[in-house]
Image (cartoon, rainbow, N blue to C red; front, side, top):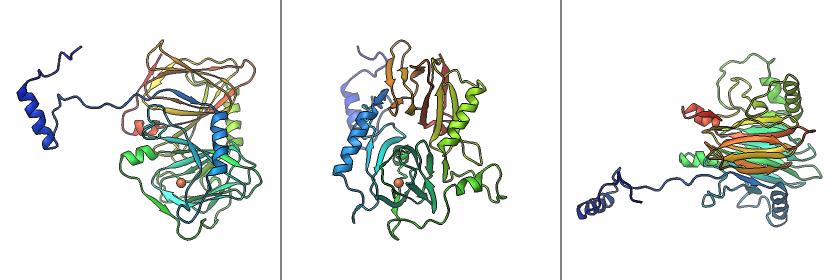
Length: 353
Ligand SMILES: [Fe+2]
């Protein structure tokens, strides 16, 4: 059916369009290509993991020309295969560092974080000279332009989620990258948990406090304790179950200006209420099994049935709610979102179902 508001076609209009195009101009009435709608999607951990292990056989880390390369398997939204991107703002990838391997030191304007899935706790990320040991469930931040390298001195693989705001950074033409240049690793000058000593609620007096994102590590043991205590106090969000935000240790705002990090616990048998919002979210199941029902229209939903370590994506403005598949065990889900970007630009909008 033709558009009733379209400008009637005519030889004069065609001539005008040709002339506009010749001079790199366009008419507001002319059609333009719109962004493809991103689709809800689930990536099964067994498939991610087997591809990652296979990459460990055929892709070497390091080398002279690609000293700062990483070995990751990237989650790709089926609507963004041309960009090999998980979302328009964020990238989630799964990284493998084998025993004895080092991912060499570099920094970039894309902010990044790691959430550990597997490891014996001996591996670490060095962020700005601080050795941050990585145990399963730990979250390590490497904000914009901070030096970072990874090393696995242990006997077991380390596997973690890498999340970067690289697509947003690149969209803004603000992507810069630099290799350390003084060897494969920066010196370790601060011990593990230095950030907690210096930035905890009881800390040395600070001057020149700014709200900029800081290298920081959130230990799983603390996260799990907080989840259990809030669950015991029955503080349950209707849309997300027991929902906690990882916060900036000084400002109380999001971890980083472009990436928010959350963790939620769905009590046994819990079904949450639907809502939708303009931020999009990538989830990683820490434990448990269940279903997230997602759809851009009410009643036209897709069931994303997840188990431990699966990853899934809920696009902007899609209705969604969660069901814990177990009546006995809680489910725990870590998530990352571009919500801080939407909020800071006045673009965050939410609707309850
Ligand atoms: Fe990096």
